[in-house]
Every structure is written in structure tokens, then in C-alpha cells.
Amino acid sequence: MTPLRAIEQAFSSALEANNQDIDDLQNLNIELIRRQWFLRADAGKRQLFNLAVQFQQELTVLYHLMGYQLVVDEHFGLVGIMPKRFKARTLPKLTSILALILRQLHHSESLKGCTDAGISEPPPGLVCDTYSQLTKTELPSKREMNDALEQLADIGLIRLSKEVCEQSKMHFISVLPSIEYVIDDAYMLHLAKFAASETHTHDPVEATTVIDSKEAAHD
Image (cartoon, rainbow, N blue to C red; front, top):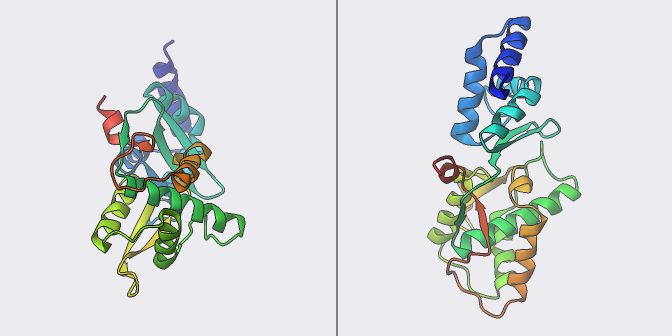
């Protein structure tokens, strides 16, 4: 029996036993492919999260065959997929630095227990101050900063509020627990290397990359 056939039988048996419809499982997969990450606390996502927990073993095998790693974090109520073999997309240095700064700030807040369901909300002013301290340069324009943050929102690391901080003119930021899966300790080393470097530019750098699931899905 092929792995896919075994998964199909396992899904069918479990769905029938729990009086569930295949449409529910399809909705879960659509959500993961469309958004890559979602939270149990998101509106209307509790049932999908419970399905991911219930079928975690089968889904892990299924996504493994598709070249993805399934993440089910019951503590933070987080579900997501990450490509195992991915096409690394080089981000502009500004976006990369902000990602690493937010990862560092999020980790610090987590250690202090200052997160809500794994989500931290670093003040935009603190993000700007940390950037200035790290780079020893002037802040980029607010448009450049907000555009860089939009890129991080697009790959599921943060969410941006429609509300704008009056002082910094930047959107308020919610850092999701997915950032600790995508930007691991190896990426954090790049932050220390950058801080110690003598050249501070906004040119793209090949050393700092993130997973681009959309590109990976079309390789």
C-alpha cells in the first residue's frame, strides 16, 4: 500500500468515526496553503485547529510527502507549514534586520512572560530605538519601515494593526509565535554579526534569508 493510500484510508476511517465531513479537512488544508500560519484564537479557526491536532500524525506524513514540515503548537494554539526544501529569497537588509530585531524583542518578552497567547506587541518606538542602537545610523523613512514590516506580515511572522503610532508613524505590531520557528538561533547569529560589522547599508544580503512558501510551492 502506498503512503498516500494509507493516509487516505486513515483519514476516511477517522472522519467516519467522528461523524466529520471531508470538507472540514479540505478547509484546513486550504487555510494552511493560503495563509501558511494561523492561530486557534483567530476568528472561526478553533475547529480547524482542533482538526489539525486530531489529524496531526496523518497530516505530518501528508505534508512531508509534499515537502513541507507541519507545525502544531498546542501551547500557543499555532498551526503552520514550512517548506523543507525551499527556494531562499533574499530580502532587503532593512527587512532582514527588522525581522531579527523583532525576533529578539519577542524572545525577550517571552522570557519575561509578557506575551499573550504567545503574541508580543513591541512598541514601534522601541523597534526604532533598537534599530538605531544596532546600526548606528539614521532611521529609514517611515514608508520604508512600513513597507519592510508589510513584507514580514506577508510571510506570516507578524500582523500589523490598521492603527498607526502617532509618535513613530508606524503601524502597531503583533509578533506571532511563528517567528521563533522561521527565525531560529542560527538566524539570530546574523544580528550579532551585523552589529559587529563596519559597513551598514540597505543593500540585499545573501546571508539573511527567509522561507518563501509561495516560491517553494512552484519550484
